[in-house]
Image 1: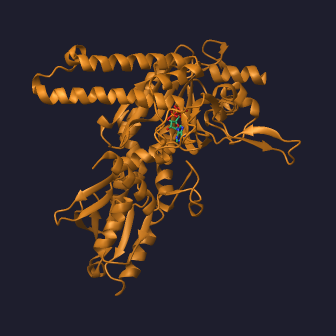
Image 2 (image 1 turned 135 degrees about the horizontal axis):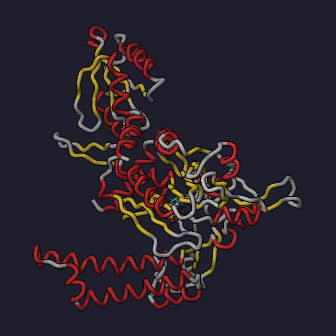
Image 3 (image 1 turned 180 degrees about the vertical axis):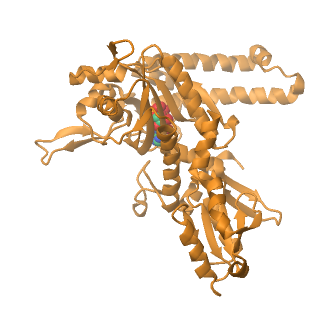
Length: 516
Ligand code: ATP
């Protein structure tokens, strides 16, 4: 099946099984805004718990905060967002559609890459084992021409983006003869800067109101609380502050479902270190965060680092963790060495001294910062994309199963009485009532057992137990494993320990701890 079709199926599965709905669905939705349904919210909360506990429980020098979404407007002046949090946008006059100029050009670069890849793949097939890719790329005239064009475009694009030269960006679009995918024409407007922050007003009357912003990242809530936390927590460097919360960006182009949203959630951790040690910590956090992802068992080959060549003016190193989505390797998390830029800017704009007194060296300095920043929704999407599977069964049927890591699954255990009579529902409820304080359980008695198993497979429930007539006599139930579909008889009394081992977040965290 084409990857595009797989992705479409995942999107409709998310809706059909109560994971993700378009916002304001009965009013036909709102662009790039989504609601999480009854199963989605559980999965999302489990992802957040996995992150939070891996930061705050596993590190004795990381603490959490929960800062407000509204912040003093000067925060965004100091951070540079008012002046520089812009995307270059361009409109097509015929389709009236709006695009990000940088995305149009990056798509064009990707087209060259695809052409080159196709030629390479063809040659590999032709030459078999004797194929030498490097040699082919440096000798085949057609490929060399494509590579030269691609590199020249990339170079021109980098220069234009670094200088934010809007005319140059437009000229590239014209020279490359990029057309609007809707109208097919090259009738473009000029490129303009577009600030991604949403504005609103505080104050009871419009007159006395002042403009404030919906935060475009959670990080600044941590920076402005650095002193509060350091002092009240008597924190010693190095230490970190973690936060999970909503962020808002007026993205020009909404694409790929919950990959790019206008309202989304971030999990960010700022790690404050002594100046000069930051690159070592940067390297360590890259590894620590990659281990967190890999620990979910999605396959090491599905991750890669993308080290940034072009750095933001405040950073001295940056890397993304990319995950293989059905639409290619995409950024899920960013790890940035932000120097002392943010704290120094806030010191300058607030007039406060924001420093750390180092008792070991008796000197004061502004700490450097390593940031790890991951989008909850993008993480959710990567979990969904990897877990969604269609399996051909021996009897020729296909089952749709979400092979979620058990610790993240919305429902851990479905409790199914074989029939709706003979005291089986009562027994099933009795079992559920003894387990529900520890595990998210679901009771289901409607339809055949087979149909009920399928419904649980579709929402990723790792275990189902069936209560039958024997249960009333022998105190055992049938435990069915989602992935292997194997069934075994187990004593009700053994269920808590067995489930704890297989589905708890603690187990996942212990594995991570051992891997680090
Ligand atoms: P992109 O280049 O994809 O726009 P970014 O580099 O601007 O992302 P950061 O500012 O580094 O992203 O934000 C950190 C993380 O927040 C990203 O890795 C991503 O997981 C998440 N994120 C950023 N923007 C969005 C969005 N519009 N919708 C969902 N998640 C987002």
